[in-house]
Image (cartoon, rainbow, N blue to C red; front, side):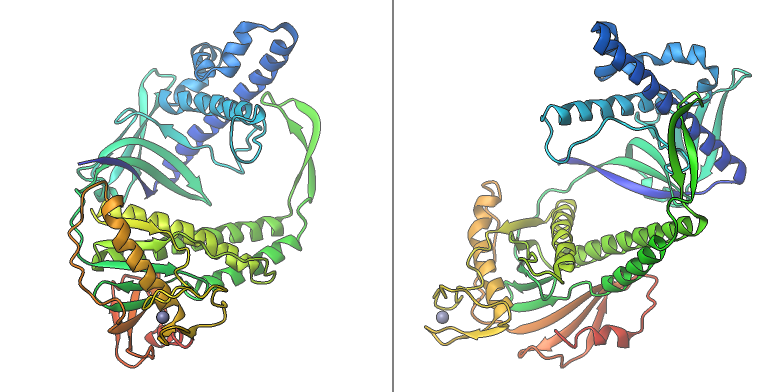
Length: 488
Ligand SMILES: [Zn+2]
């Protein structure tokens, strides 16, 4: 049985005084970060001028800043009111940021250039509190989280108790570490927990999915059923709202008030910065809130669809090709969104598969659209994107574009499975005639659940609507869901 770390983000609630105390802890860590950064600036110029090995060691090693903490606590006793874990991790975090910058500067790091760390403004970003060791500095008691703080002036260790309504999710789990964060005025405890993954189950029901532009994916399974999974069209409403908020925000004054920049000691540095107007800040807050909501809904969408798939199938295969804009200008942004959605969906599928002991594979999608699954004739010039149905010039079989691609995908999955399954041959109950799709279904995945329609043999919506996985909070009526199939 293999083990895997996974992350649980749970809401925290507290009284005004416990939240004030928590904020105080975060503020002190933020102060420490800025103070150490100021020190780093001094060490950096010292190192440049004198080549001091001491300065270099503190500045550039993993634990250099952390080792400077005991002395700093003597100089600034108020640091002692914070538990040693978040304090230590504040120093480690800065050292890490410096190392990332160094690696990036020397070309040893992939991706965008990472600059030298900047001073942090606590009001803009709540400084997270990281308790990196199991059961050190925190414990879960019934529905509460008890956080140990540092030692007060009375030399007694203090603690705060916060409500953790979803504490039951941690039952019988091994908690590795804890990070406390605050986002848009809401507090969360992020637990890393260790989960034991189940042994991989044998495979009998398989579906191959062809991801594309028109829908999220089109699948064909080994029992002769075809499923079209609709794109999350409701995301568009969010995008519209986001666009509105962004344009409202941008019409407000971002540089309303000029203020001097001060260093960690409160001394003006001579530089200045601007504060945005109240309206700008208001819209910015609303925008961030809407973005968070969109993110949450997208995540729910991906998990709901993945769970539904693995509830029905032992193995899900998906094409490795990701649709892209291919130079089209207007839908480019949407296509880009779709593309990253696609990648994230695959990651979610892979994770849900591991978690449930099922199998996920990506197959080489090359040629799946242009090859007739029946006689294997390849249409050399390809099938134009606009052509949703076509006839094979060799065997005259009529094809639904996506379905033909998915059938070819399924063949590849059946071919690849024995090798990809690490030598362990899955017991595939195959024997299904892939040339013959017996039933067609349409899935629409909403945050509230998966809605399934039968589309009959000919692809029309002809029968009842089945609702599965119906969750809580479903603001739409059934009629709304049905509308989404007009263009299936
Ligand atoms: Zn053919």
